[in-house]
Length: 303
Ligand SMILES: C[S@@+](CC[C@H](N)C(=O)[O-])C[C@H]1O[C@@H](n2cnc3c(N)ncnc32)[C@H](O)[C@@H]1O
Image 1 (tube, helix red, strand yellow):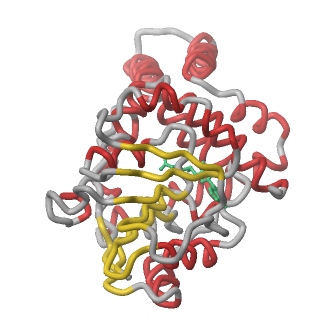
Image 2 (cartoon, rainbow, N blue to C red):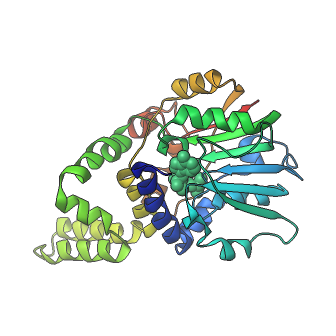
Image 3 (cartoon, protein in one colour):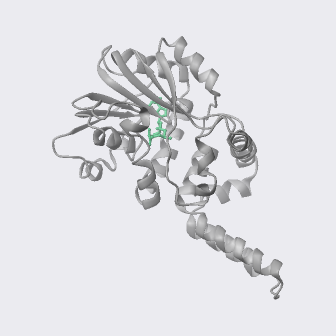
């Protein structure tokens, strides 16, 4: 039986993931998030291996990536049967000789024997669960000895993160206007919103007016549905635990993982994020720290 938080989490992500599948910029970004090279594994590491995609979501980008990396079978689990909505369509992009098994289960109580999987992917999931430590322990339990688990975890701090996670999340809960605006936001509505602002600008031939209009036009170009969905992910999700790398490292060690290695992935953005994408993966850079604090924390750990 799912808790209210779990039901709401799944409902939110089912909506976001269904829209991701219809957005080509999201699909191309999310289906290239991981590769053996990015994780520092040998090219054929996953060949013929059995993997778990813990918290696969409704769009299965992680599972597709694992199969592309050579895995023979991916068992994908998430909280309720909404994850079956797009499975038929997903199976069409999977090579015929590979297997995707989809199952309803919680990462907090995985229905598998100890040491079942060669590799566990838990991407963007544990910080949304009611018990992140239990999630990590369960991933450890079902992983074979010597196998690797990969976690993508929300980092804390930085101007962008604090604006979204502290300011906007609070406003979303407290301000009905902001709630309605953010909940229903999409590219069309955003364009209408900016056009309305543009219509109120007194037109004259000054450079300032020209620059203001150019700025607003570039916002229309650079804010796409992929970016809006990312903002909705950050602001609307019921639970969003945040960590710095040393907290993640401590947690992984507590759950008995060894060889904890931070991994940097380089997603390709086609929206406003492209202007600062360089800094996503440079957590020691001063500008990066200012913007993103601990940054996105991806770790590869060994059992
Ligand atoms: C941000 S999405 C990530 C989906 C996918 N891993 C990806 O990378 O595209 C978070 C997912 O975690 C799932 N989730 C949250 N709590 C969970 C739990 N206890 N067990 C399994 N999945 C869970 C949500 O339903 C949602 O689909």
